Length: 139
Image 1 (cartoon, rainbow, N blue to C red):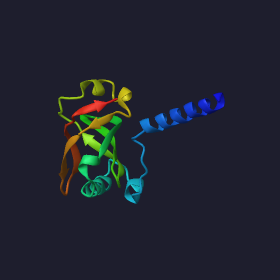
Image 2 (cartoon, helix red, strand yellow):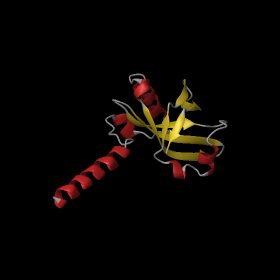
Image 3 (tube, one colour):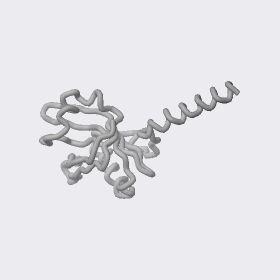
Image 4 (cartoon, rainbow, N blue to C red):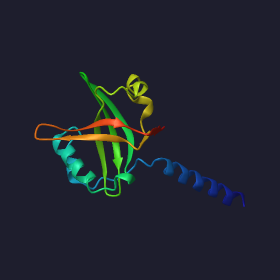
């Protein structure tokens, strides 16, 4: 009897831990494997893939923060039904996320950004995502 209860507890804890890691997904797109998320080729492919996804079902998980010169970017793991990629979102000039910026994102890794809104700038010279807003962050 004690053995059965012990195994049920272990099994339940395992399911709980796995359920918390919802940012995990498997990439099946060779372009995302071959190119860096910072590259124009990767971003162009990401835009193409986003156009085939149900936007209401996409989830965004904070992955990294980088500042190069005056340029600040957030890296998100984007997960959809057929999508598993990294999205680099430019936050230059945005007057938001001051604590995340101050801590350089360290304590925010894995946080979900709910209802993330961004604009896509895509022309012959640039392909980028710029932060507009988000509803809330679940850390």
